[in-house]
Amino acid sequence: MYKALIIDDEKPVIMAITALIDWSVYHIQLPLYTAFDGEKGLEMMHQVDPQIVFVDMNMPVMDGTEFLKRASVDYPNAQYIVVSGYDEFKYAQTAIQNGAIDYLLKPIDGSDLKRAVERALSFLEAERTRASPLKDDKNEAICLNPQKAIQQIKSYIEGNYCSDIKIQYFSEKYFISREYLSKLFKENYGFGIYEYVLMLRMSKAKELLAHTEMQIQEISDLIGYSNNNYFSKAFKTYYGVSPSEYRKKTE
Image (cartoon, rainbow, N blue to C red; front, side):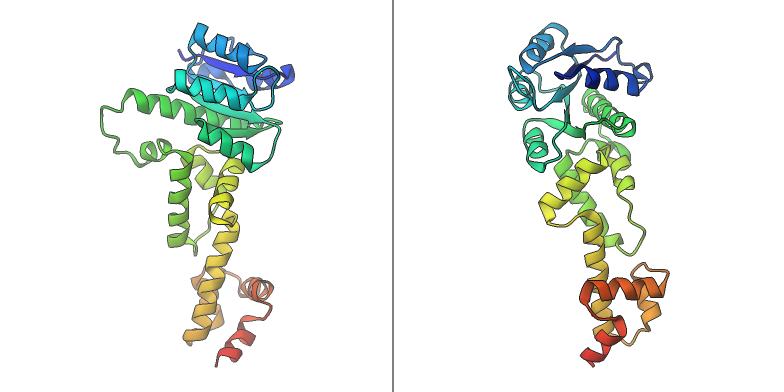
């Protein structure tokens, strides 16, 4: 059985995390251990040595940042999941730098909580079996840290932007919440995931309009738009001219 610790000064948050999923499914011991500030959290770490730790960023006595700095040194194999009311990348960035594997926003969403727990368990299982090479693509994916994951996502998008790209697909593949994934991608590349897909599609459309004699419908189909009217509207919104107007300007 695994042991989990929740460190948060808000009792309703502790109650919500406890109630949102069936912990027995994940072989996690009940009741979950709890602490109301980082200092008590460190004491609890020494007492029970939990494998999964949920920690709030804004707490009295010792905040989440200081807790992570200390705990990740003494307990580097524990999996830390930040739970925060702050929807700002600087908090997520600090959490990553100090060993967190995920960043969940309050109020906690049950699906995101489940993915974060599954991701933590995947890391724990990978640690136990790391002596054996991991061949399965899913196992390789879940063992990536968030920065490596978004690098792979960017490469995937660049090779598949003409297909139907869904953030949910990446969230499930890499066991990272959608919000956290979107923040990381935008911070690293300056675009949201869907913004990046649109930029690649529009750039390709512009190139094809200027340098080929392909019909606009063919270009629309090629870059992933099944509806030519929708493509034309998207192109005009992006560049300020319709595809046919742009083509005329380049002739």
